Structure formats: C-alpha cells, structure tokens
Length: 196
Image (cartoon, rainbow, N blue to C red; front, side):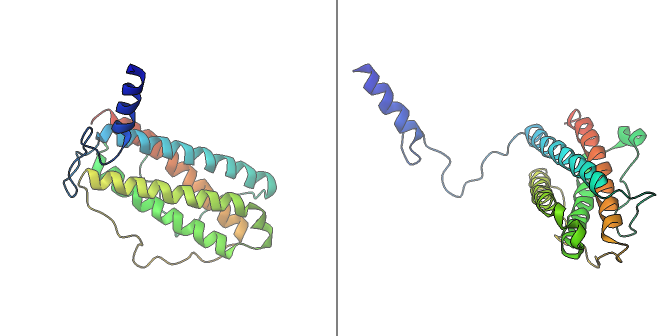
C-alpha cells in the first residue's frame, strides 16, 4: 500500500548509509554553516551565561554582602565602553572576548579551589557557571575557526592566581567583572551580526 511505501522512504531517508540520501563522501569538507547562524548561537549562549551570572551575583550579595568596590588586579579590564561599539570589528571582538572569558574561567576555577568554607554554599552554582563558561569558550573557538581567525592558546602564558584578598571580596570582583564583560559581549555581538 502507499502508506507502507511512504514509511519505507522515510526510514531509508533517515538511514545513514543508504543510496537514497547520501551525505558527502568521508573526508570531503562540508560546507561551512552560515556565520550569522553561528553568531546567533553564540549570542544565545552569551545571554544565557549573562543571566546565570546575574542570578549568582544576586545570590552572592544576599548571602555575603560586602560593601565597597571589589577589584582584582588579575582580572581583565572591560574591553570597550558602550559608546565605542560602533567602531568594533568582528575579528578583534571575538579574539578579545575569548581572551577575557578564558581569564574569567581561570578565575572561577581558582575561586572554587581557594574559597573558604563560607563560600562552599555557592559551589553548585559556581560549578554550573564554570561549565557554561567553558561551553561558551568552545563555541567562540569554533566560530573563530569557521571565520579563519587566529586561535588563542588555551592558557595565557604567565597567568597566576590573584593574591587572596578574601574569598568573598574576590567572588564579588570576579562575578561583577564577568557580568559587565558578558553584557558588553551581547551588545557587541548583536551589533556585529548586522554587519555580516
């Protein structure tokens, strides 16, 4: 019957090694995906991580309030002001963003190792943040390779853990800086997407 024929065709089209729907031969390069779609995916991951960071920052402030300005000299400085977004170029933004996020990943890893017993209550959230930050870094690396941009080493030469100013103050500094960086990244990536 025609229903059986349709079912057979559907099954054959899903079967990976059939002659009905052949893919590219093994070893042949696949057509690279649309960079705008790749950038969309990167923006979504960045927004999601921004929201995670915002929630964790609120939780940190509620559980461990700390007055004053929180800085660590080892953290990257914000890549650019919002007013300078118009002059951005995709290669420099992706390169700088990946370098900065790699630094934040190292700081989160350090914080998880060095934090005192009081900050242990944030361990599950910090672990999730580290995992998602690592996922965003892999997405940026993939996007950079698809756009044939130079790749950065996985670790910055000479990166050293910051001197311990106190786990709570360091946590405030790291999460606050990461939040600002991700907010800038979303704005910059959205603007650059319009230029692709």
